[in-house]
Amino acid sequence: EAQVTQNPRYLITVTGKKLTVTCSQNMNHEYMSWYRQDPGLGLRQIYYSMNVEVTDKGDVPEGYKVSRKEKRNFPLILESPSPNQTSLYFCASSSVGHNEKLFFGSGTQLSVL
Amino acid sequence: DAKTTQPNSMESNEEEPVHLPCNHSTISGTDYIHWYRQLPSQGPEYVIHGLTSNVNNRMASLAIAEDRKSSTLILHRATLRDAAVYYCILRDRNYGGSQGNLIFGKGTKLSVKP
Image 1: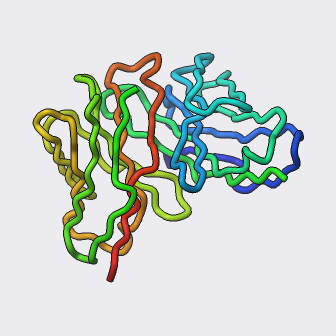
Image 2: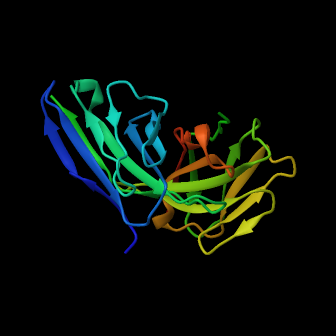
């Protein structure tokens, strides 16, 4: 089954403790992206990757890192999480071409205490 | 990057048609118009997309203005399961560079009354 898998689904951590949220897709998609969703602010893009080893900042990249060493994986790294990074995070992927439908993961609810 | 403007919320009655508007006055000639929806407690899912002509699929119809500066997602008979946040985004068909910066915004929250 074609899917985007995020882990973990829920995560509670403390300020300053490094964490990684994983994202994996099994559709051989070139494009992958991370979004955060906060009440009243909608979906905001953090980082995106057009292909392996190619990443770029979205609208709210501060405090986050990403890497794209393999096509299927696009982890989101919080080196020193802070409470304002408490949010619902979504990973998305798509192929290249005119019919580039985005596929989203189920989300990761992160709480930073 | 081209952005879209949508109403914050709309209401509909069950089994009636719903027209969800989206303005994209700065759309470029290579931008496709995509619609996604997000059901409660789920990630967004694709609904429909188009370039110039109106489009239909099993979920909805997309009506695109002649000047392409606005579009309307049409749900022909709303059901309670259609209650969701609907997002209209623009996606450049030329893949590469900043075309990856996809702006979703806040979308339109659709409520469906029984």
